Amino acid sequence: MHLPKSWSEIDVLQFKEIRELYTITEVFNREIEILAILADVSSEELEDLDIEEVTAMISQIKFVNSEPSKQYKHQIDDYHIKPLDKLTIGEYIDLEFYFSKDYNQHIGYIASIFYRQKTTNQWGVTVFEPYDFSPRQRFELFDEYPISHIYGIIPEFIAFRENFMNTYGNLFNDESEIDDEEDKPTTSQESKDLQLKKSEIKWGWERLIYSLCNEDLTKFEDVTNLPLIMTFNMLAMKKELSL
Amino acid sequence: MVNILGIEVPNQLNELSVQQFETITTIHADTELDAIDKYLQVFEFLGVPTIKWDDVEIEEFKEIVKSFNDLSGKPELVSTLEIDGYTYVAFEDKFKLSVKDTKSIEKIMNSKHKGYLSELLAVLFKRTDLTKVEHYSDAHIKLKAKLIRELKAELAVPYLVEIGQKLSKHIPKDAPTEIVE
Image (tube, rainbow over all chains, first blue to last red; front, side, top):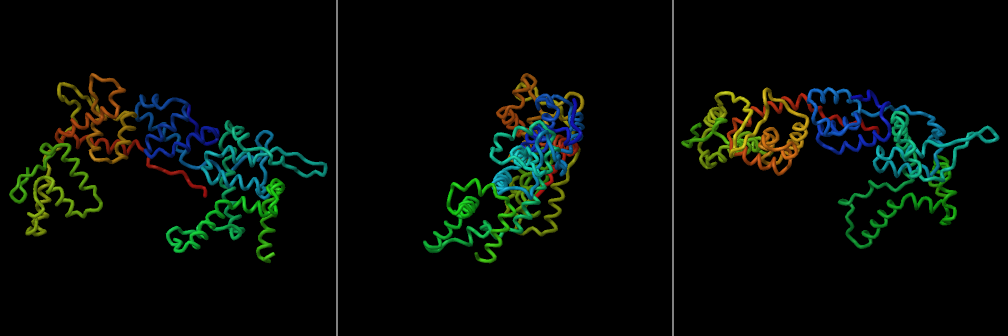
């Protein structure tokens, strides 16, 4: 039975299957299921083997309990990594969405935002393909690549996001400000205010775009294609100067 | 048997049933109780009313606990049981856990429901006239556990020791993946 020795031998699809198994709370049961995926056999087949043999195999795949490498490929076939500082508002919003879900299960979607086709224009400047596709159309592109090729974009984005929120967090409504117990409304006006605050948080990104569009929804795409950092720098300046 | 305040109380593994042993284990596992309360509850369960302890000094109580815990003999693993005309076999030559048994046992242990010790034994003892599918069906495990509960604790204890040793060897400690956040 061939077993992989590291994450580099495990593709994205297997990685997602493995991570999904972490909902199984029984460690031995989980390890058997993981082993079955990696050995490409059914777990019933493993049940017939000697436990010593199975335990030895489990010890060979211990690496699955650690994270894959934080390195990643800058190019996969025709797709090139788009630097984080070049993200647009629309790309960032979609990344936020996938990270707020289970990012391990959405790694293909995340990769499809980061890995893009590119060209060099007549002035020698690298131009990335526009974000006018849905990650749903591309997420399977990465399924058969080793997870070690792309996993590093996860910790890198998380670090970027943390830094971004530290810098621009004051431009967002803070969800932690609402404490359901402490902020229990006592009057109908307080109740309305609390409801409004919750709605503002729920529609945070939509409100931001709506405001940047000057309430003209025909400009929606223009706004979502704006560079993230530049836009937030401008918003920060606007807020600081009360413009 | 041990005499506690004039009452004969079963304390040896060949005197206690598996069911009684399970109850005693559950009381001892109750983290809400302190050591004295645990023994008071065990003694009450075995027939010594709590009111009888009112005038007992702590030193005497300690001696009673000591004699209650004084177990004689070391029971061996019994490989075969005969119940109601059926034969149940846990192992042939040497006791070993199969992968399937280990999976089932781990699930039962994690649930920690009342009576789970007899269910562990029910996984190990397989009726010779049935197939593998029937051995592990939930209904059949519950039925076997019910029968095993009536047997003496001397059957259960050596298996619990063996299972504990084997699980610690074969079940890896849960190592959650490193969180990258």
